[in-house]
Image (tube, rainbow, N blue to C red):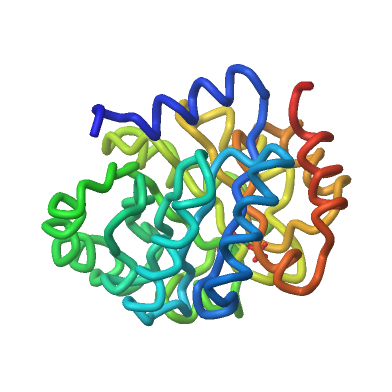
Length: 249
Ligand code: 1GP
């Protein structure tokens, strides 16, 4: 594997497109065939990466199969998005090697990382050093990760964590409202984080329309993650409109 292949790809995409779309496939929700088709469809409409994982996805064998199957049909990178050590499987291109910085449980800050690092190396996955910040409460990511959710209306706290992440050498920050969240992270929070954090800014959770997507990108998000919208039957056509709206064409 070329060094930093995924990161280099994402950065060059970002230069070209201004903002990127990542689609999350939760292996617990989608089956083998539909995941593979979905990945091909979203690649066609301009998504820059497929994330596989989620905090409720725990079946490692199933996830490994899904990654293997998806990989056959697409060129864009598959990036693992693990909720636990079980989210580390072979054949993906990279992994959001994340620390849930605002967890109350050290397991999710450093221990799961230590337990999974040897497999990341063994499987040849490119680790993308990521500060994973859970915003708000009541979602699976919040509950499973024992997060002390940063309130939606406290952007400066998110910015302080992001700056700390940067000082710790992390090149990615993921502002996570949680899968299926009623509301996404606010543009104001993204803007405040953007002013402080000098790396790649990912925003996800509850994004399901063009207007929200545009506001988040205008506020400074580099990539938006969309999952539930498609799981709940949202059309590829509408996703394409979102992708077109946020990307320089
Ligand atoms: C969840 O940020 C991702 O981890 C995507 O969220 O499922 O709400 O799109 P949605």
